[in-house]
Length: 417
Length: 193
Image 1 (tube, rainbow over the protein chains, first blue to last red):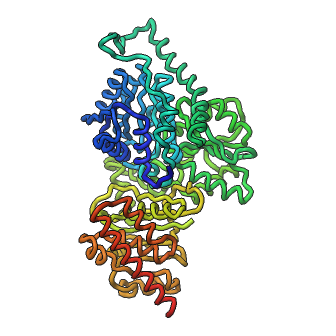
Image 2: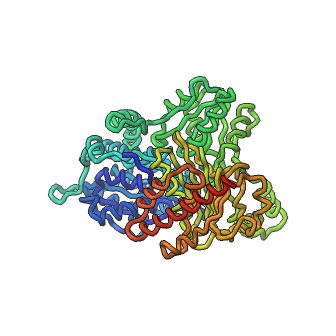
Image 3: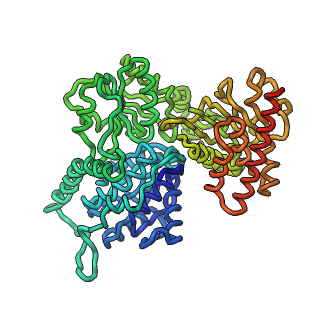
């Protein structure tokens, strides 16, 4: 059914249709609306056979999810930013133990400086945690990916993060097509655990593994993600059969056929990029887009196939690997091993900095003219940066950088973007 | 695509106004996208919310910097925030005030702008009358529906019923109806003038 609703509410409804049995979460913006809505539906009895467990921290949230999943329950949680960092030890345990938990990450920056706005630093920090990571471009995709995520996670016995841009998607009202319970039931069978803690058939989960077998257990985690590379497109095809929508898969291309310049990105910024590309196409520019839905496992072959005929590739990412540059772009470069083309890393939108068509037009034209630097920070205010660098050169006790920069900038409450 | 920006203060229902506008547009069969200017909202602090309405899927995620319409819920913002930033030359302005544009010191600003797209609405008074609280968001979006002709009153009513229930919904519907009719009447006067 078509409805106009908030992204968080839409995701909460989709989660409820997946019949989770345990939901545990600790509130943190911008994820909070999702678990609030789920808490309401558990309390009202609308979501049956589900226990909503209030926990005292994100570490407890993931620990409860681990216990619930090991006990044979379909388990769900959601977090963001510092919340994700606080649960990291348990995040690795969930995947290491092979427990198919689904978690929404409402992507948000990581402090310091503290910042509640969107970028991809949080989930990308868990790149190597063994969780699969699927990125949503729209709220429709976010809700659809959650339904696929339970199926993917449970088939492979491996946890999945569904990543949606905090605020930009979670707090946006837009049109979504909400599936019926019947459709979701037809797609997602009841959870059949590979391993379960059951007093009637006692087993232990979480053995200490020494050098004799640790490598083998870890390799299996990798092998499962390689299986996921095959399974994710199939799950998208099965999804289309029941729901009638193209959602999910490993990657999506847009205007890519004859593109000389390809822009690679993840998440909601793809919408703004596509609008920019439409305008540039109308002016005769040969530019296209590769959106990456599955960040982990990373679809090296599909990325290579989509980019190999381009003359240049611009990876626009909402993340920064301090000391080297891009995170996503490192993976994209790996996919392009041995292919000679110009590669540009663009770090954009950190901490909620708006990514505008105006800036993208300028950026993409600079890429076409090959005047772009290999590593670019989109819309970085060099005056502000240079002033602080100068302060640090001239005064030993220059004070805290963030505070000094805020003083230099002055009030921002009066600015629109 | 029609882009609106709503300015107000925390507690005045700015974000809810944008959301309801998007629901009303959805009820008209259009695509709509509403989103707030994601801040740490505090009561009284300046808040901005955005709403896009279009006939095809809306993919754009940037803030609205060149709006077709601006709704101002609180005139004290006029001296604090650049509320009119980027407004198109033929854009709509709807201000919550019982005073005139000239009395607000906007006489020079509106020179040359189309009179039938500028409107002052005593939305706080209408809200107090019907809801008993000074929350001007619903009368303003109903007023905007009348001013722009983009949305029918019944779609605004549907949006109200989706957001509120019981007495609050009833009061808001009464407030919306009064605001809508007031502006329709005033626009008829402008056209005959």
